[in-house]
Image 1 (tube, protein in one colour):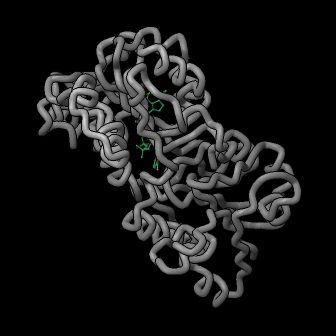
Image 2 (tube, rainbow, N blue to C red):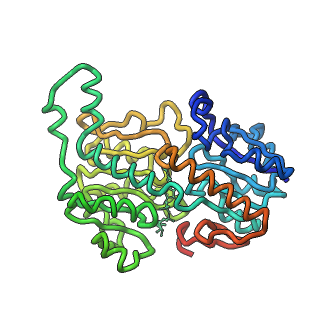
Image 3 (cartoon, rainbow, N blue to C red):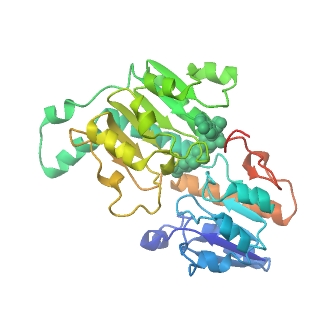
Length: 358
Ligand code: NAD
């Protein structure tokens, strides 16, 4: 059986740090285990175009392992060619790079290592909120430049206390963000999600649900995006929705780049309608050198907290999703039941309710 893994190149870092498991060099730590059972294990970072290893090996792979950090895009067309494919495993959380409708049609199962990096991301969200609200990045850049002008920073620095924070999506990550915000004494914590939180969970963080998205964003000082990318969320935060944001609001997106319209966000930042944009996810990954989000600034020359896609790939997270990937493959090989929370697409149907209302 052929197992194909598309991972990112770890370079020197991965050679000297074996805990960088999700890399081409360290191969999720499962080569020996797979080969000892007689399976073939192909690992590559080459994922774009017909000559890529991805497209070359997908035709006879039975298991495909991908990671959201370096997404191998398994399109409907590639599903047609992948005649042996039975199982797609996402080493991490978020399987939007797989055409899930095609997986349903073709009877290919799609599983994630649910929960493996949700704390990692929630911590990054809280950090991103704080760094925008407190105007941290320009302050640090000033120090590196050798300058010292407190007022230039303080004129756009605020407290998180007494602000309204809202999450689009209150699943594993969104809820953990709300939990972590409780001690900051925000004015209110609100959420927008078609799946209401269980009453006790909402009560525990004192979160109010707002059912209309425009109404929701108009109440937020800070919006954090924590829903999956699917047909219903692609381009959700666009020019039209941004009009309903409070002037000077901050937006944090660690969910998926394509949920926010690239140019509309950059324009809202440049006009001052948004005071800041921060996150680690991009509509194309790796992001091109001239991607507008790399350098977009607010009217005071700050408000950009963008980083490469790494919030969910801390070394702690990598250990968890490497173990989880192995467990999913082991269950498959031994014909054992999978952890229900990991199944996005089961045999011929969606098992998760998170990728759109059906
Ligand atoms: P989850 O399935 O636990 O929660 C997702 C929530 O979003 C669900 O409650 C669902 O009902 C809600 N949702 C779906 N569509 C929505 C919509 N149109 N409007 C509002 N809410 C909607 O997933 P999770 O573990 O919290 O992860 C969420 C997403 O975060 C992942 O799908 C992935 O895209 C992203 N993620 C990013 C990183 C990273 O490193 N940046 C890491 C992990 C996950």
